[in-house]
Length: 248
Length: 248
DNA sequence: CGGCTGATTGATCCCGGTCAAATGAGGTGG
DNA sequence: CCACCTCATTTGACCGGGATCAATCAGCCG
Image 1 (cartoon, rainbow over the protein chains, first blue to last red):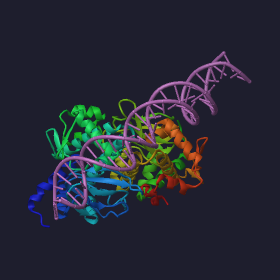
Image 2: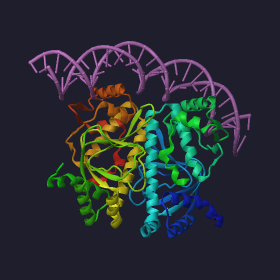
Image 3: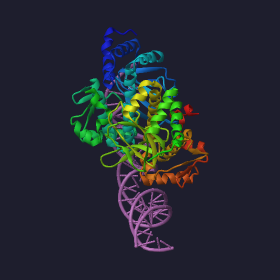
Image 4: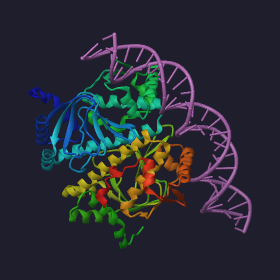
């Protein structure tokens, strides 16, 4: 479908984020912007963009909406291993690993830019700043993944959910998606359960425990945290792994 | 301490591994080998090589011994988030992220090569093949980290331990540390517990369950798996995430 | 109004944690 | 060679966090 030139403002946060990860040359910035505008796509909620085992033939950059990376076991058990938020990219390893080891699904309607492999390679060939920014993103991603491991392995249900909420808040903030003490929470409790390694039932009870203790307000797909420090304390949350200083 | 020229054979597996990840130019290979031989180090068991929050000022490549990446919570709970085996490197992000988000400890005595940041940068500046091999290593690492997430979040105790054993086997094999159906298992049950998110007591009982069912023999720091397929089935293990085809 | 999806609640069970003690297996010094 | 210490493995008893199963409730949409 046709997209207006006002889409430029749509890709701006991506450029800003990449540039914060690693300073981009003016040319890299321009050609990235152009490539993104060239490949704008939309997807509905609950669609698989790519599945485990699929060949990787393009890089996707998220402009709006929430996605998740997940893996499943043969018998249907499912674990969301990470979220993907606006400004982040999906498959920056397009040309290094041939097939996906996990799946990527939309959790909400999504707008993203798809850059084909060949084009992406020509983007990074000439200028190493873009490749470095993407590598940097991979490294931050890796750090997030490690934090998720300790979350799943060693935190209690309450700590896990609180920690996830803290992380979501801090990751949405630099892209302007946090408004005061609130942000949208457009996903189902089933998704939150799969992200925290809990059953839906117990996730629900844990959310209610957080509500009862006054740590969160979760209503109408909106999460409000009146006392962020209290929530962080309950979650044993320390944001250093997110490398946020880069975005300030 | 002085190291003989026979150390060349010590670094050879590293070169081979890097080359499998991404073909290295002859110069890259030579200068990497030289840099490693120049920075050989030893460490005893149970030492922290670097801790969460420390600045990263060098890249370490493991030549022999087992290490682990771990994170801890304020109250002492500890999660091993990954193992590091011979041929693998520790901090390939030396020049992109300034401080460690996790700690790295030896689990056995270790020999490694330390390449200082400045030297490392000059290694990658001239030739992009080495940087790409390291990026590739980071990506594989990332995939392993995701598998650990589903291991911790969705597998039962028995599946987790079986899965860890399968992974150890497959990661040791390409560096020649698997002998038939056996490999060394030089770590304590406490370490295995911290890697699987279990308590030591329950890990012990799970190991005994694996023994009783005939899936493993674990004795004298040696792990033997007589029927690898059976163990893989019990673990719901599928090795694709390890990208092993590269090493065959 | 019926059907669907997601949130919530209740009852019950069991996997895995916790606490505590016993057993082994080196290592060391007398 | 033995006494002793330390660290790792193992076992037992008990408990509780979170899973499971099932039913109800609340929107939302056609």
